[in-house]
Each structure stands twice: as C-alpha cells, then as structure tokens.
Amino acid sequence: MRVLMIAPPGAGKGTQGALIAAHLGIPHIATGDLLRDHVARQSDLGQAVQERLTRGELVPDEIVVEMVREAWLDAKAAGGGYVLDGMPRTMDQARAIHRIARELDMIANVALHLKAEDDELVRRLLARAALEHRADDTEEVIRHRLALYHDVTHPIVDWYGERGILVTVDAMRPAEQVGREILTALEVMRPLVDFVPEEARRPIDLTSLGAAFGEAEASARPPG
Ligand code: ADP
Image (tube, rainbow, N blue to C red; front, side, top):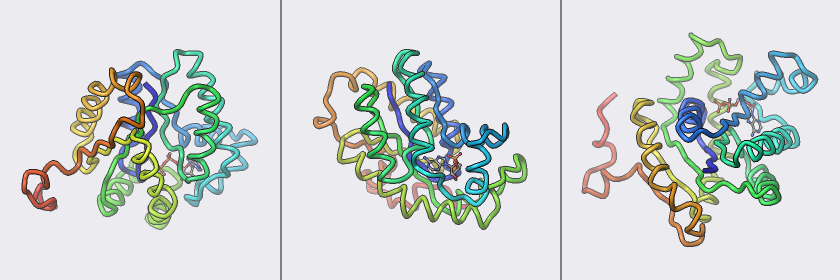
C-alpha cells in the first residue's frame, strides 16, 4: 500500500506513520526526521537547512523532493509500499512528487488526513517541548508552523479528495484510538486500492458520523 499523510504539526503524523509502517511492513519515510538527522550529523545539507527548521520555515522544495525521490527508489526495491509523512506541504510539492511518483510507478493510493483543532495541537506540542527539546517547539514557532499548515498545506487536502484517495480521521482522540481507526480503514481499503480506479472511489470522512446520527458535532466530544 502507498500512503501519504497530511496533518498539522502535533496531530500525530509521526506516531501513526510508524504504526502504519510496522503494521503493513512498509518503509516509513518522514521528511522531518530525515532533515533533523542531517542537522544532527551536521552534513552539508543539515547545515544548509538548520536555521529554517529552527524557525519553523519550510526548506526549499528541491531538497525535500530529491529526498523523497531517493527514499522512493529504496522503497520500490523493498517491495513498492510506503508511508510518506511530512510531504507534500505545498501544492507545488504535491505536483512535483506526483510527477516523480508517476515515473517510478509509486503513486499514492491513500492520502490520510489527520484532523485536529489548533488549541489541542499547541497543547500537545508544548507538552512535547518539555520532554524532547525539539528546536521548533517553542510557542511562537509552533504558531507559525500552524499558520503555514493552514495557509499552504491544508488546501492540498481538497486535491486528494477530488482524486478519490482521501481518508480523513479525527485525530483529537487518544493516539491508540486514532491508530485503531486508521488501521481498520486501511485494512478495509487494502483489497480495493489495487483494483478500483481512483476515479471510481469517493473520499472517506470518518470524522462526522455523530452529525449523521443527528448529534451536534460539538456534543460528540467530552468537554475540555
Ligand atoms: P511538524 O509536522 O510537527 O512540523 P515535521 O517533523 O514533519 O514536523 O517537520 C519539521 C520541519 O521540517 C518543518 O517545520 C520544516 O522546516 C521541515 N520540513 C519537513 N518536511 C518538509 C517539506 N515537505 N517541505 C519543506 N520543509 C519540510
């Protein structure tokens, strides 16, 4: 299965990406981890991107696009499946990797969108900051990363919806519940993705069942 993830910072992309990869036995390609690893090793690339990472800015497209191309070549040799986490983050990146994916026969068949509210995301990221000391987990930089997500990343979600490969999950709940829902959805889709063309599929939104049962969305959640 070939899965890409679109989610705001703090929604749990890394955690769920690792879970999916382990469950399906496919590589987890996380652009943020790859970049942080370059910074930790102080490679030329790491030195070039370090400051942008710390400020919560996006690194130049050429860098991440090439990174994903190389990771896809390895993933292809390993069987062809992957979970891509952290990419695309702009419409330009979405187009660029779509082109490369077509060349390599590695086009994603599921775009997993993790949905969560900003206040909860800030709360989680600040809690993580206390434990992990990631350079970009200060409140000011977190707000900036969230603003970037809303401005340039979130609009891509609709594109995947139109292509029929979108699955949206409510990521406000505990990681374990979110993970269970994701794996269930992927297991159900597994036999379909290779045989049902994208044009014949419809986006799946697992976040709004409450509304469908006559329940107001806000009351579907416990307070706080
Ligand atoms: P988060 O989603 O919590 O911000 P990531 O680990 O996915 O965390 O990304 C951390 C940082 O790495 C981003 O703020 C950005 O600087 C850089 N980065 C990761 N992926 C990309 C990408 N596709 N394009 C540009 N910059 C990226």
